[in-house]
Structure formats: C-alpha cells, structure tokens
Length: 56
Image 1 (tube, rainbow, N blue to C red):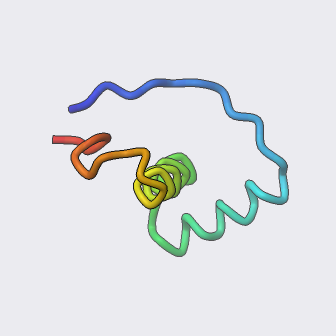
Image 2: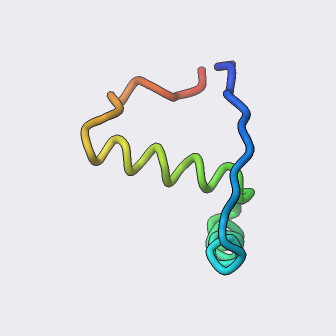
Image 3: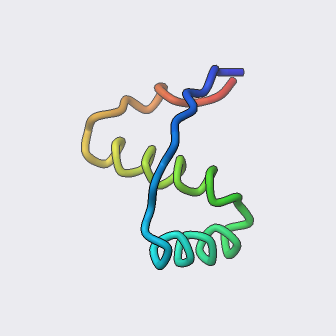
C-alpha cells in the first residue's frame, strides 16, 4: 500500500458540512472524499499522471 502523507487541514464549517453530506452520498469518509476530489482536480488539470497516487 502506498504511504500517505498526513497533515492538518483547517476548513470552514459550512464547507465541511457540505463535504460531509456529499461524502455520505458517495459512501466515503470525508477524508477519502477530499482525497478523491483533489486527485480528480489535479488529473483534470494535467498535474497528475493517471498512474500517480493509486494504491496497489
């Protein structure tokens, strides 16, 4: 399994609440949903190759 970097994230409460609802709709934790959204955004922007960031 790929090693994951841990860091504190400060986020607006309203944004967190929206992410929490969205994550629940997708059957994910908030943490994994944020990681999913960031990965998708970086791929779409061409800053992450398709094989980067995937767990084996």
